[in-house]
Structures are given as C-alpha cells and as structure tokens.
Length: 286
Image 1 (cartoon, rainbow, N blue to C red):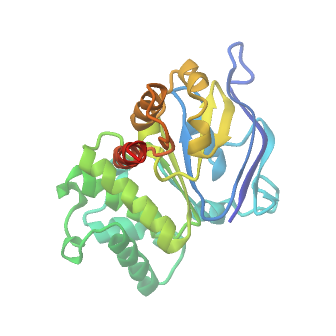
Image 2: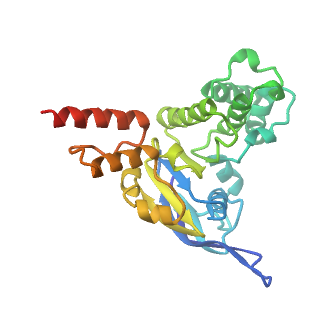
Image 3: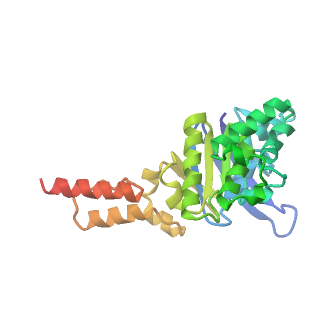
C-alpha cells in the first residue's frame, strides 16, 4: 500500500477568531515496506499528520491518497482503510479493557466481521509476533508489566493485519530494555511481514539506526525528508530547531576535526562508532 499527502493543510478552529494552523502545505510519499521516522518537537504537527493518514482528521485543504484514491472521496471505504493503516497512540496500554489478553487482541478482528476461528487465528498470530507466550493468553492484561502491556496493545492493532503501522511515541515511559524491545519488534515486523512502519518520536537517537528515511516536522511544515546519513549532515539546521543528531555522530565528527584521518563518520550507534574508530586507528598505523 502507498500513501500520498498532497499539499495538506490543517487548521483547527478555522471559523473562530483564533485559528491554529497545525499543518501547512505538507506533501510527501509513503512507499511500500518502508521504515520511516517522524520527528519534531511538541506542536510541530507530527500527531496531526499521522491522524490524516487513516482518516481520523479531514484536511482543511489538500488530499490524502491511498494507492491513488482520495480517502475522502464519496465512494471510498474509510472503515476498511483504517484496518489497512493501523495507528497505535501514545501509551496504548491505557486502551486495554478486556478481562483477558486473547479477548483484548481479538477485538479488532471481531469488528472486521471475521469468523470466530479466523479471529482466534489472527489474535494468536499477533501475540506470537510480539513475544507474548500462550500461557498468558487467559490472564488479565492489567497483570502484565509495562513493556508487556505495550506489546499486547500493539498486537491488538497487528491482529487487523495492517499494511501500514504507525506508532506515536511507542517507547514513551519505557525503560531502556523496553525501548530496545519495541524497536527490535518493529524491525522484525518490517522484515518478516513487509509492512510499512512509521514511528513518531522526539528522539533522533532512537530512530536513527533503523529508519530508511527521517521526516522532520517544524511548526507545521515538513522541513526535511532524507536518509539518516544525509540528514545528519545538516547538524546546524537541526540544532536551530532544537533537535540533536545522535551522540555517536557528534563524537565521530569531533574526532575527525581533531585529525583522525580516514574516519568513517556515517555510523549512528555506539557500536558502529567504536568500530569506525578502531578501523581509523589501524589505518593510521599503516
């Protein structure tokens, strides 16, 4: 599935004396099987943008196209579209409500009108994908750890088998281990199922490693849409938006400025930076 945003503008309270422009003429293309990071400060337009993706918000002007079809067209099936574009809000575990895990994850497929056997199959598959073991299926979701609750909530969206999965700050409130687990899960889903993953974050550090592209929102506009390695060459422009490049990149840039020749500054993780430094030192010794 492909999505296109064509000149999207969204104005809240447009008919009042104090209208707020949340999005200003935003255009972008989302292709199949992409891993996209969406970053920007609070108020930059990130959450408003993703809510246009599955039709929760109608643009004031512009169009959102799903495989070339306007999702606000008179004959477009938005209910079906919202199953194809799964949206996981911040703290999705707050939306858990059933008495047991399997029932909670079954809620979405049940609303899709599937047969009971197919509903159960979808729910079990989704729980397996997020690493929730079978012995927990009949347990209350409220007895789980924070990280497990987050995974069950994500499974509830996966059970509807979306082609695009959008997660709004999926690691908010999690410890470092929980954050790593969420990102590892998203990469695995992209690799195994070929779905497009869009992760909204305020942390460049978190999304730098896995993203094919990073979209940077600033005051309602799409400021950048680039591969991580190219984006982080724009250090001064990002810092002007109060956004920081990954710490590994800061370190590598500084070492290169201090004369460590043949240093590859493209790695974005601590492990990659360490390897690049070792390689540069070996190279300098001949």
